[in-house]
Image (cartoon, rainbow, N blue to C red; front, side, top):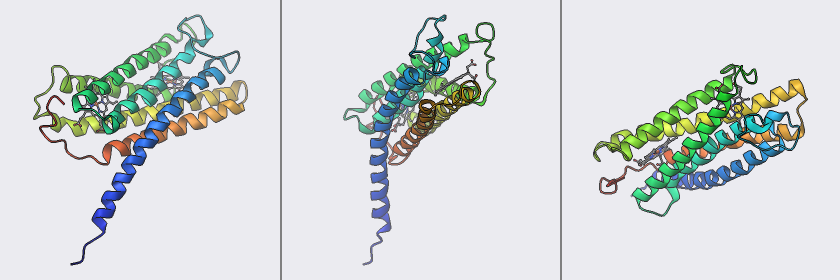
Length: 248
Ligand code: HEM
Ligand code: HEM
């Protein structure tokens, strides 16, 4: 009897794509980590590339504002993608994966809140910066609101007080979709933030090689990471059996 090769080929392709996406996602989050640390030291975006670069939590130090890109990229382009991918590679029981997932999102919560505080403090009374005057801050705000909502909903559904086990699979597709959406909008925010700094340099100083290099790669790697997370999470999306869901 004739057997179609379409079904096994499609299943092989989707399996291969999921493995590649996972490998790429895990590599790109670490590349992003190295890039954002060197970005705040080498380009030092908020000091106009002058001086040694770095970050500071002291309001009076010009390096204070560099803390914003560092903390935001750590949250949206490192902790969140890592948390989403944990379900795909950690060789552990589901409850353990859930606690690691929640811990990584809690790290993102702390980091993004510090990043937001830094820009919140930077207002027209202190530095002359007007809030929400650019596309970047609007994308950033939407990403932050989605993240806080997603964190609260995930916490309430899966940790405390926790929804009944039978109801969790009803919420699960929304949690996954909004999670991927949040990470994608975070990637757009990271790209537009770096792009704005590049444009500001062009007005004030002239774009230098380091600035141009980091702007291109920060944006591209953030976007590729989000795509890898989307493929890793949405492909290979088999329903979880009820017995596995126990304390899921
Ligand atoms: C995922 C990453 C990021 C998110 C979610 C994010 C979010 C935000 C938000 C919400 C604001 C507005 C804060 C306010 O006015 O109260 C803002 C402002 C700003 N951010 Fe980011 N940011 C991110 C990454 C970056 C990066 C990588 C840079 C580049 C250096 C950057 C540079 C800026 C600048 C220059 C402002 C002030 C200008 C403006 O209001 O648009 N951000 N960011
Ligand atoms: C403390 C808060 C959170 C808890 C307790 C939690 C819990 C969970 C659980 C139990 C799953 C597995 C669902 C299933 O397979 O049916 C899951 C998956 C997922 N969560 Fe969360 N979550 C939280 C916050 C977040 C946040 C803030 C995001 C995104 C920004 C997020 C993104 C995702 C994604 C993308 C998946 C799919 C992972 C995969 O299947 O590979 N979660 N989460």
